[in-house]
Image (cartoon, rainbow, N blue to C red; front, side, top):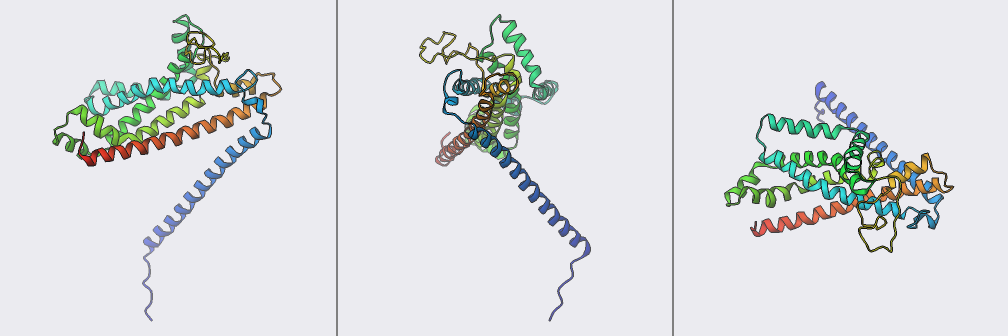
Length: 304
């Protein structure tokens, strides 16, 4: 019977360290998952245990109007920040030459991404409310939170484009494509999954933002669902009306509301907000996979 070959000391220590690190990472991942499940479970239990059907009404006694305002505000904010953020990322990755101008742009983007939301809220209040001599409105809120999300989308877009293999662009140029054709039909589709991640993170920040919206979007909402005049201050789709969101509803219900259902409304708002973020993330991922499949089909067919 042959004796088993002894494992050298350094190798044995390396294997022991590897097993310990693997075990530690599994424990950390499990603890994080348990914490997340416990957090969501607590919110769901608190909301469902106090649930009343009238809390879902699109009226002052329910959160329906705040639910609509949240979706509408996210739509307006992403409508502003996605083209600007992706455009800035493309410029930084493909057009900007290394030098002082590029350094200034990168420092500006990094500074914007690190500013507290309360500071940007005050900035938005001064610029979009005071200087324009207007009242609190959803569009001012969307402009303000788009400043928060724009650096995130721009940075992730730039990093995603720089991470692509150089052969993508070289192959496209070799087939006679122009620079813009290469960017729009080769590089952007290839980097789209990473860009979608940036958009999801940006939308998540808008969904949960409260401090910046407190000074710009307002703390009240008055929607007349029968109104068809978009210029009316009570029309649901008028972006220049005041619009309290779910995050503001949570803050107001927990801090200053005298409504006997304030606690139930806050808990239900938190649960609905979590469901919105989850649904948006799943939908964005599905869209990304669909566009990836279309891009692969186009590439296999040899079409630009």
